[in-house]
Length: 277
Ligand code: AMP
Image (cartoon, rainbow, N blue to C red; front, side):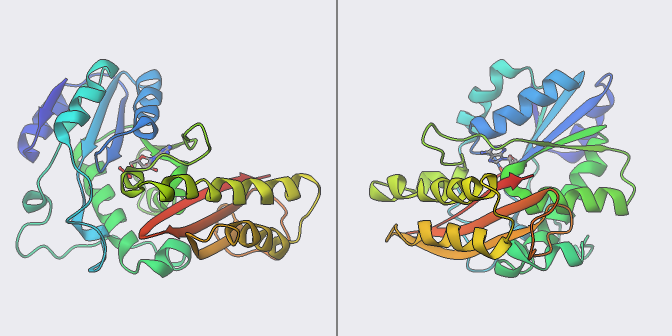
């Protein structure tokens, strides 16, 4: 496993990789969710590239960029046994040098949900992911269903810009009690940690209703809300029951559907989702 910072060095190391190359983009502070993407890439590709970059342009002015958790030493130790070929950890100065002015934006898909709560977030995501795709020249790229809208937006970008690459979306890895793994779970202390399981409980309750035959999307959203309201530490930001591809809100659930939520537990903002159908 080789760790690289500079772009030129990364490009030349990339040229020495053989076979199908899989790319796993992350912001570091790795957990089992990230590791599941790496394992999948390893199983499907001859060579695997991991990137670790806390991308400043996807954070809003009042978000947690400066306190986003970082621990490169720990990250490198965690992935050491996994057989990653290259780890690229670019600097913000090299990704966005003075005078930088080129952006990639996906339109309709980024307007709702996370995009509505975090304006300019997806512009930062699609721009950095396009830059990583250009540098890595991978045949496959691995993302988590945890960030469902991000996965949809990247699929759209890949189609629209004809990136010659397959997007592979991997299932959400959860704690034993159902909490979806996230680097931000580090902020959950004491009672907030146990309260956070309410996201999984709320989505599970709506899924049960769906499995019992309910197809009225508003009833499913109401079920999620009702469970979240039982937890005083939880503050719902949005609940969505939307078409899986277009992310348009539904009245009636028909095909593949994304049930997604954003919830504050104390000061920590968490997202989670289930796929119905
Ligand atoms: P991040 O470092 O938060 O940008 O995440 C890097 C990648 O890991 C993204 O594609 C995420 O969707 C994915 N990921 C994060 N958490 C999980 C999880 N609990 N299960 C599966 N994938 C995840």
